[in-house]
Length: 88
Image (cartoon, rainbow, N blue to C red; front, top):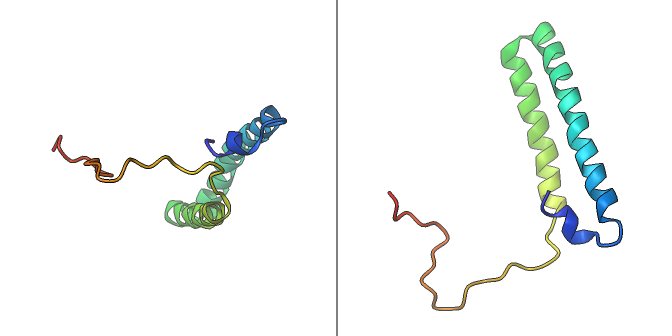
């Protein structure tokens, strides 16, 4: 959801609407697919099928999506670490 507004300025609302509609359609299709797979193949295989489907879709989307604006990096010599484990 964060990448879409970076790429659209004129038709940002249309792009966000298409993205939200896709999320809503997947929310409608996934339970139906899961119910069908549960009936035909059983719960174990239905979860495997859904997991591999998500793996394929998300792998492609991770390869295709990119940020438009580069991230701001901390100044060199900064003591900020990418993962702060001080709380542990």
